Amino acid sequence: MIKTQTLIIGANSVIARSIAAKIQTDAEMGLIVISRDLSAYSAMPDTSIKQITVPNYQSDSIEQAVIALTQCNHIPISQVFICNGVLHNAQLQPEKRLEDFSEQAFQQVMQINALIPMLWIQKLTPVLTGKTPCTLTVFSARVASISDNHLGGWYSYRASKAALNMMLKTAAIELSRRAKNIKLIAFHPGTTDTPLSKPFQKNVPADKLFTSDFVAEQLLNIVENIALDGEASYLDWQGKSIDW
Ligand SMILES: NC(=O)c1ccc[n+]([C@@H]2O[C@H](COP(=O)([O-])OP(=O)(O)OC[C@H]3O[C@@H](n4cnc5c(N)ncnc54)[C@H](OP(=O)(O)O)[C@@H]3O)[C@@H](O)[C@H]2O)c1
Image (cartoon, rainbow, N blue to C red; front, side, top):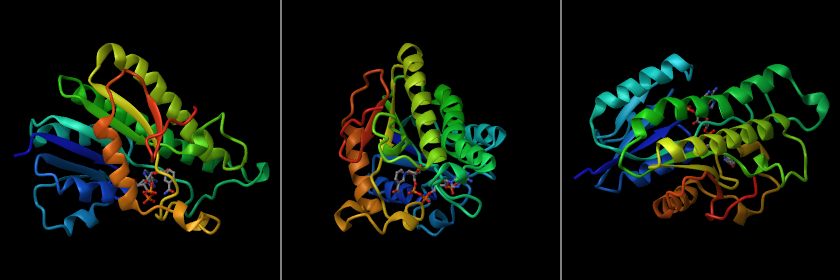
């Protein structure tokens, strides 16, 4: 019997799909997925997955999705994963040097990597606040660490994930007062074999390029065992803390 539910946002991410597949093996855990493209889930035989398709991640669409979520059922949500993130796409590439920096690209990367997760946190907090312990994990990256930036480059990606981390730190202070059941986590999956890392894999040693299934397993173990301590944690795939 289903006791609690997992919510995955940006659920078409390769890592998100691996998390979803693992959740489906747990008979006591329900699953809600939200994405612009849920075709990967429509093909699955399990009809108990609640699917919410969003046209985009504008504020109104997020609000509508949260309403749809609350109308599904009243089973509490115990874990949330916000997977959205962009490093490159048809319009942008990570910058190697100052000359590569583009105002439009920066705005797009900030919107996807920092603003969209923040809107979800804002609009989900009333739904998650309550007696059920709930972890809310947002995909960050080690390159967001200001103290660990020795290589440079990737201005927009680094800045957007660092902004995301600051949002989590700040929200954790507020939630420690008004929603003590919610634990915020900024997660670095390690270099994982997905479309996001594909163009940058050639110098990664084979044992440092992870499968999404491995990362999903690690992450689910981390969130299962983490304490509700009222602080934001910045963790890697081993569950080790990263300096902010
Ligand atoms: N792969 C790595 O090596 C690596 C390393 C460090 C951090 N990360 C982080 O891990 C997370 C998951 O990435 P992944 O590797 O699984 O990549 P992926 O398979 O390429 O997934 C991309 C994700 O970003 C969302 N997205 C893409 N374009 C978007 C847009 N224009 N507007 C809003 N959302 C958009 C997608 O949402 P939809 O479901 O709506 O399509 C999906 O959730 C990202 O936040 C990434 O920064 C990955």
